[in-house]
Amino acid sequence: MIICYYQDVNLDGKNKVVTHYFVKEEIINGKVYYRIKRENNTHLDSWRILPQNVIGVYYFKIPYLGKLTLFFRHPLGFRIVLIDIILLALIAIVIKWDQFPKFKRDKILKETNVS
Picture (spheres, rainbow, N blue to C red):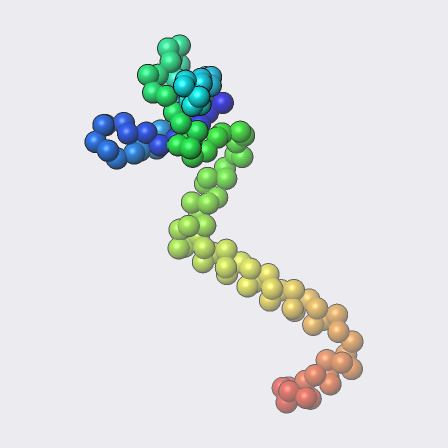
């Protein structure tokens, strides 16, 4: 299992986000610690991670979801999606308008004074 956690990597008092493989759980003096290792490494890291420092756990992957979120975050991508939604709504309105019986369309046009 892969986990992300906060760790003071440079020993400067600033925590950074680190991602490593979870190996096992240890209990020392009644406290629970997680032991981790790096990718393609057989040796455990010297760090003992507290459970409250864990940010997230990797369970599964949804392909291309990251690219989709980056597209929506970009101003142009958001505008493209917004314009597409508006165009689809207009098309739906036009299709529904043509399905109205003629007498109802004429009544609506007379009430709004539109020719």
